Figure (cartoon, rainbow, N blue to C red):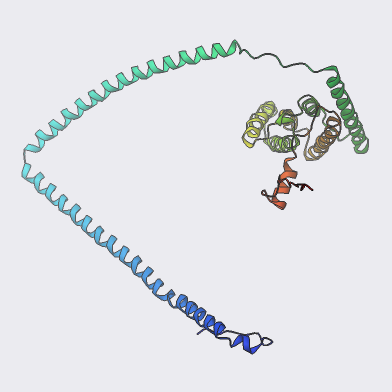
Length: 329
């Protein structure tokens, strides 16, 4: 049974309209058919499941019967054989020894072939390695003009002046307990002002690469090495961080240096936060100074900003150009 509830404030003429009544009648039949078919569907599913189980049970019985019959036949043949069993055993031993000798001969032949192939492969590898050592035909990159060097000098001196002042302020406020780690930031400014378009210089790689590298390095510093073996942290941290950045697509060379420093165990999470502030300061100054030059652009793209725009506006609406046509008078 299907019950319809009408709006009490609606007009009766619209509710009693023949077209509306026909629509409600057909809809009720459709709803009733959908509800009525549920029980037969459940029954047919149960029947198929039971039929599959019965088929498997019957097949299992037949297979067990065949296995038992074969066992009985073998047992009767072994009893009829009598004295022939000893001769058969001797023949089987001889055949097994012959098979063993044949297998050993094949193994020797395959071993010789494998050794020859390995020698040839090692020789080819050594030849290619020697050719690569000689170097290719690529030339050296062009040098900067004096004007571009002046822009680099301006950006680096202003950035590191701010960083050094920030480091001094942190030391004074913390009583010398905390400090900004400046060495990786020097490598970062080298990328930002000399290789502005390189992927490793972009803010996405700088932030994500440093976060990934320092988290891994600090976690490695918790590994309980003995004082004699603590030096191994400085090798383990970059060995994990550098291929990890390559896999994640956030290669950033200064992050490899930061991983070595933070894996020593002498710095911790507070230093991590201070260092990220320093990274953000270098990004802001690089954006301001590089874009003041007519021949520089930094960054090449704001990855996070573009991703947020795509999620809000939609990919189809980004990059659309509105063309306005002027009609001729």
